[in-house]
Picture 1 (cartoon, helix red, strand yellow):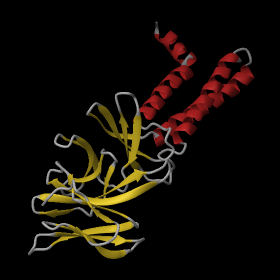
Picture 2 (cartoon, one colour):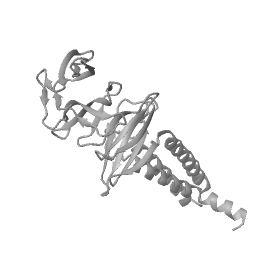
Picture 3 (tube, rainbow, N blue to C red):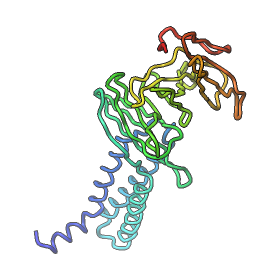
Picture 4 (cartoon, rainbow, N blue to C red):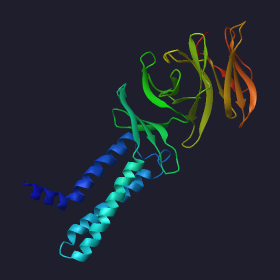
Length: 288
């Protein structure tokens, strides 16, 4: 095939080539961020797919009206513009893939996604298992660089936030999914203490939020729950302090909407104890 014939072939099949490339890009989009959960994507992918379908139809009509130059030129112009808009749309809204990794037979995609020009990028974690089932978890308010980590002791996959200081936990793929309240973690001795919350569903649309604290090594491994959990009013803030004499750790919740009421919830030590209703002692929590 000489150069002139190749140029003519590209010209005649230009829209087909674009359709193939865009289809592959949308397939990639679906893999890294499946769109059947509208909690995370309220139509960005679907609108882009409709734009691609419209572009494809106009390009087909351009080929159908091969003997009608005026009509054909209209469809050619329309197809070119719509394919151009499709490319710009993909460039603007394609989820940014931060990291991909495989652990425990599952594949994880750590992405950033936004749905409009006004919205900020939202970090999301997509998980595909060996049966091609998937789940999506939002990672909440995070900043800086996010990385996937794996703890061989607990066999949990987590997301850590790497800022100016030491990496801190942001999320763990546990049952139920475990979220950590960023910037409220505290180091006492050779451990990190992470306030955490989880959403335990009790019907399709409503869940009960429970709060607790996890103790982890300084390397963010071997995380174990302190022997309590709190279910009750909304918690707007959490703080921890250690008694220098008894070495007990006191955990305070700001209960209620911001700024909330500063309340001592739980004391962790040789005599671990709850202080208010809604706090429950756990038999399987770790000892000091």
